[in-house]
Image 1 (cartoon, one colour):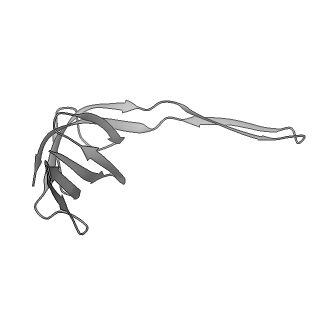
Image 2 (image 1 turned 45 degrees about the vertical axis):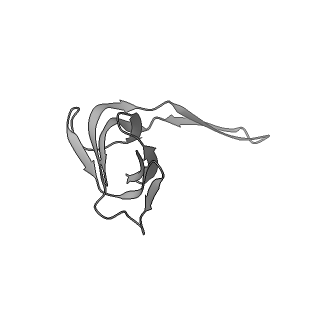
Length: 103
């Protein structure tokens, strides 16, 4: 069984007992979450597609940890202008584990 769920502006394909990272969510590690914006649910040959959401479908998950993503470096340069700007950032992420998909 799998589902495509919309979490914090990101659509992700999830299956039970998988870990994945999403933009930072409120909550502490170990806390249970429920997502009801499920766009598609697949179970073998049977696929349910929502218009836009599948009615009554939810994805249960738990927060594993909060972390920061890989550093992204931004370098701006204009030749013959003595213009160089170096900047960077790291995204704030939350790692979650899917516990169940109900449709």
